[in-house]
Image (cartoon, rainbow, N blue to C red; front, side, top):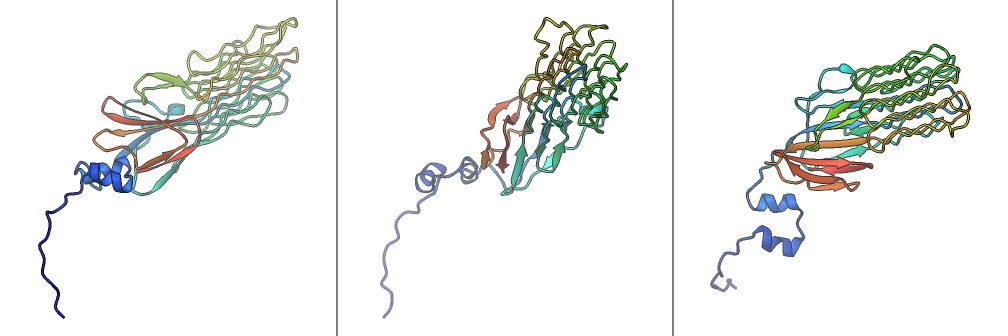
Length: 306
């Protein structure tokens, strides 16, 4: 039997509006249906900062080093005085992992590593005291009878040198930690990846020896901390590195004051806003559009799929 003939109805044009009611489409799929997006994917600039190192208990100890700092943001700097890195080409449908390292607790190991895809950074070095030497993204400052720690190439600088009494400042992403005479933390590096200039990954101040000086100062920028004061009548507790800056923690004083924790890390990316929002993301990133860029910022670990 042959097929019966009939009249075709009008052609139905699928749009982002009608399709979303059927399929619950993501933003990227709506853009593709509307003809606003080809299968090309953006080139992504990144800023990846590890957690800061902690100051050491019982002093005088060095300040913690700032977390390792790597950047490909055009017109800015990466850590350790290295060359600016290349932006990362991403692939549609691929999920890229984001890791945000924790700041080291006082008297603990180095800060936690951070990463975006294949780009990883080293946690800041623990402040030194006695026989500890703390290499990290930026190195921990030298302390009583303990040498300073080295930094990591393209991530940060070494900690300050010790006179074997007062603690030295931890290294920062932008400069060497101050020697024992000052105990000042090394400076961090500023970035405007999120549309506002913020300095991060500074070194912590070194703890004081009661016969020589007061608390070591925090870095002039970078979210780092002040070392413990030398007064036996004080709490002798230094300040901690600021959250999501990778700042190093302050070192303990000669009066037995405890060191302080480093600040947690930070990961941000940006790409041209001519491309749509990512297909998916996890870890609750802050998503904004500013200055011709789409910007994603993470303060906790997650992922992104383009």
